[in-house]
Image (cartoon, rainbow, N blue to C red; front, top):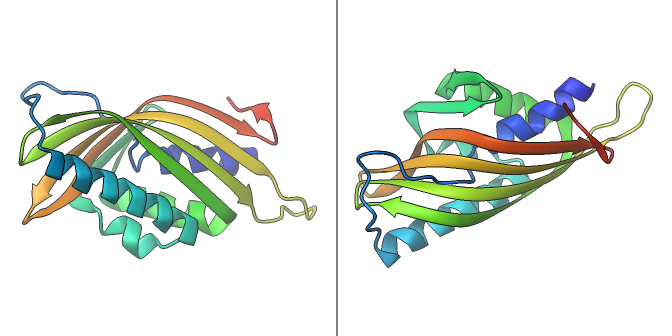
Length: 168
């Protein structure tokens, strides 16, 4: 049970919450692009709350890569984990705060902090569990035909609790 709950943070963190500049990415990002990225994160937060996997999956590129907890997943693996995790939860709430954003009109890297709160469906004993995570990620976004999409997300820090107890 605990491992399934802990997977929530790993999966939700892979949506990206922290952008850290990578080599080859300049420091100039227009206000318009910053606003589009901020709106994309706000939409993702709402999509998680609604448990709307279709909307979540629309924001990633076909060659999306997620790096979290020492594992690397491609888009299909990540989608499977998100689907399973969302099915395991009664409620999910995610709040994303952009810390830093760098790049240009075609590629940006953002540093974000995400707070995730969730309540599981009842376990075999009928008890639900409260999950909380504070996540820092480096997310790479690319412009695909005028729409910003996630190309890669890398979790750089994650602290999780289940029922108020720190998770490994």
